[in-house]
Length: 90
Image (tube, rainbow, N blue to C red):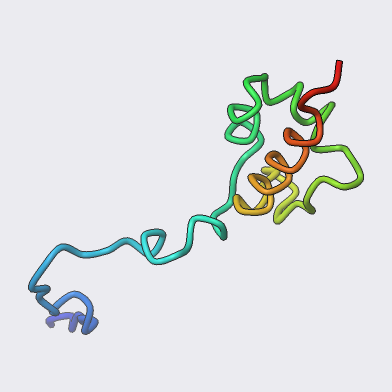
């Protein structure tokens, strides 16, 4: 008795060139950043980022809760806007 194996069309398709990953097709602004990746932008620890920056009322809304992620474009925009506002003070 032989078992039949169903082969999907994807398994038999040959590509002429390099295959792009799905993430390569998504604009960077839509990619999710973790707390560690966000913290790296500020040069602080993920714990410090979560306790002092991510909790601010005007910080972008999380995409996911666990793990905490945010849209890259929103984080970069918020960072740039708030860094620009803090220059020259002090």
